[in-house]
Each structure stands twice: as structure tokens, then as C-alpha cells.
Amino acid sequence: MSLISEKGENLRSSLALNSTFLMLGIVLGRLFGYVRDVVVTYYYGKSYITDSYMVALTFPLLLYSFLTGGVIVSSFVPVLSGEKGKNFAILSNTLALGLFVTGAFCAILSMIFAPFITNILAPSMADNAKELTTFLLRIASVGIPFLVGAGGFMAALHCRGDFKFPSLSGSIFNGFIVLGIVSLTSLVSISSAPLGLIMGSMTIWLFLGWGLLRINHDFLAGVNFGNPGVKKAVILSIPVLLGLTIYQINPIIERAIASSLEVGAITVISVASRIIQLPYALFGLAVSTVLLPTLSRSAANFDFQLLEKDLSWGMLNTSFFLLPSAVGIFMLSYPIVRLLFQWGEFTQSAAFLTASVLKVYSLGVWAHGINSVLIRAYYSLKEPRVPTFLGALTILFQVVLYFILSRYFGVLGLAAGSAIGAFIFLFLLVLFLRPRLRGLGIRLGFKEMTKGFISSGFMAIALLIISPYLIFSQDNISLRYRLLEVMGNILIGCTVYFVSSYLLKSEVFTSYFQLIKRALKIENK
Image 1 (cartoon, helix red, strand yellow):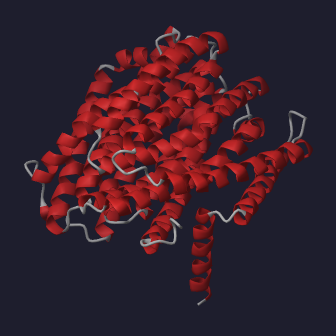
Image 2 (cartoon, rainbow, N blue to C red; image 1 turned 135 degrees about the vertical axis):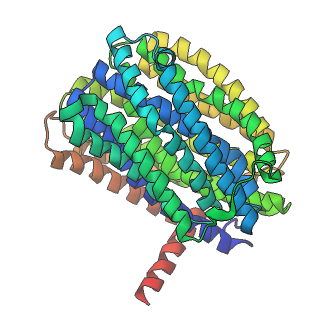
């Protein structure tokens, strides 16, 4: 029995194509995000100034994730997916306006209570660092309405099946922050970063609005906060808001505990998190984002058999890419950190510590990715309360782990707590979802995932044997050699993994291979 070749193959091909396009956009966005952070660490190294920058930008980005990535994904997208025509336009316009107004209100509160927010995010910071963080946060708050409001346009584009414009928004946003830092640092020092955030937020708001205009979205249809769809989405969002409030405690606690450790610990955690978020966002988040409208339509039509098959495809697809990513990051953690961040004032000792934290984080990346897909299944079934409750329970476990493990292992303990928590959450999500979807296609999924684990094992063995010959022991090597050691190992690892997948007849590998063949035939014609 084949999951990929059964009824719905064309739909899965469309999902694969949209996922691929979104992945490319995420790569570009994360690349600019990396440039953003490396520019700051280049100028200020592992210092209180860099810590202040990391903390100040944390709040606006958490708020964006909270309102846009949370409320929209969990409530408005499932509701919008079942609407068409003028009602769709009214619902999406109401969403965009509501988010913008909510963002403006949050921006005002952020400016007023900036010192209080700083104390929550980094209570153990030195006084001079807290003052700088408060100042930077107040500047960055100006961009919050545009950053949050852009999420409304993004949701409408997703429901219309257009992922091109949303996929480019991350690179535009981070690109403007880089532009602000490079062009304004000599004039206003570290204040250039939040000024760049304001420019980037305004630009993506306009860019995504333009994207809707290009597909003939009716902005003149008006807004209606009394629309039944709006009421339904608001009701669905209430338990999610509660759950997201709990979820956001996790990174806040990580940074709060890190602020009580050595100076620069927040920077180490932030840099390692940025690297590990790339494969998670690239594969787990991209697949789940593309999958949600499809799952929601199946749930709305009560076609639970198709929903189960597409959910299984999503988990297998995510697993296929995240398993080798985790192995590669674990085995190449120091070369990766050395290539990306060991420049200027970011020293070798800081790079070694960051690489160790990154290695521990990589142990949980696969579970984080599968969790993002499973959560979308609950949202499509309009049962957001279940993952909210399970997430709260998991956070309680993680808080205990953070305090215990950080006491004995420092920042490594924080990374270990994150990885363990991801697997606890995965176990709970599967346990509670199986009765609703007759087992999630576990039997077939287990067989395909086993192929991924075996292929990843071959990849690990190959890197273990070959990588010592491609990693340079010298510290101060040029960019060319740093690229050579990282890209050389990645090329070898990917080759072994994909060849193994081909020999094991992985169905996910086969589906992407057929997609590439069709694309090449179209191009040749």
C-alpha cells in the first residue's frame, strides 16, 4: 500500500510544489536573518550590547509570532479556507484591520512598559544593559503595527493558494534590518537595528498588500466585525491565545535563566537558536503552513480519510528532511558556527560554546518539526484547546528541566531541556490525536520513517569517516576554507542520504524525484 500513489496524488504534488517554493523563500529569509545577526556580532562581539540587541528585538518578533503565527494559523486560516467571493474579502479585510489595530495598541503598551518588559525578558542583566535594551525596545515598537498587520495579508494569500509573496517577506524584512545596521551604525550605533526593523515592517506590510492586489483581492468589500466567520474565528482563537501565552514563556524563561549565567550567554543561546531554527522553519514550518488550508478543507467536508492521508504525507515529508538536517548539524556544529559567526569580536571560545549548545539543540529538531505538523491537524479539526493544554503541560516539565539542568550544565542544560521537552510534547500530541484519526496512518508512516532513520545512520557513518579529512584544525582560516569544510561535508552527507533513500525506495524521495522530472520536461518544452 502506497501513501503517495493513492487517490489524491495530484493534490500532494501541489503541496510538494508549494512547500518547495516556500522552503526556498525561507532559505532566503533565514540567510538575511543570519547576515543581520552576524553583522551585529561582528561589530559588538559577545558583549552586553549584543545581548541588549537580542533581547530588544525578541519582544516584537515574539508578538508577531504570537498574534500572526498563532491566531491566524490556528483560527482564521481554517475559517477562511471555507469561504469564497465577497465573504472571503470581508473576512480577510476585517482580519487585517483588526490585527493592525491590535498591533498599534500593543506598540503603545510596549513603549510605556518597556522597562518592565526588559526586566521580564532579562531580569539578571546589568543596569547599563537594561537601560540600553529599554531604549532599543521603544524604538522597535514603532514597527509592531505593520509587522503584525502584515500577518492578515499573509493569511489571505495562503488561503488563496499564493505562497510566493509570503515566502519573500522574511528576506525583505531582515534585509532592511541589515541595511539599517550597515548604513546607520556610524551615526546612531546599535540604534540602527530597531530603525531597520521599522523600515522592514512597513515594507512587508505594503509588499503583501500589493500581492493581494495582484490576485484581484477586493479591498473595497469593507469590514464587518459582526460577521459570523469573524465570531467563529475569535471563539477558536481564545484557547489558542491562552496556549500561546504559555508557549512564549519558554523562550522568555530560557533567556531569563541565561541572563543569570555568564555574560554573553543570551547571545550564545540566541545564535544557536537562529541556526537550529533554519531546518525547522525550512521543512517543519514550511510543510505545516502549506498543509493547513488543505487539512482544513478536508475537515470542513468531513473527509477524514483524505485528511489522515495528507497528514501522514506531511509528517513523512517533514521527517525526510529534518532527520539528515539534525545529523548534519550535530556532526558539523563547530564548522557551521565558525563559518557563520566566528568573525570580528566573536572569538573562538564563544564559537566553541555556541557549537556545543547547537549540538544539543539538534537532538530535538526532528521532534519540533513533527509537532508543528500535528498541531495543524488539531487546528484543522477546530480543536485548538487540546494542543493548548498539552503544550502547557509540556512547558511545566520544561521549566523544571531548565532550572535543574542549567544549574549543573549551564547553557547546555537549557538546550537539553528544549530537546527533551520537544519529545514529551510529541508523545502527548500523538497519544491524544490517534483516537480522532484512527491511528494517523502510523503503520505506513512508521515503515517510511524507518527508512529515513536508516538513511540518516548511513549519512552519520560516512561523515564520521570522511569529515576528519575535510575539517581544518587551524583557527584563523580564510572564508574559502571555511566554506570548503562545511559545503564539502554537506555534499558528501546529502549524497549518501539521497542514494540510501533511493536504494530503500523511499516514497517521499520518489515523489520529489518525479516532481523534478516533470519540471525539467516542462522546461525543455
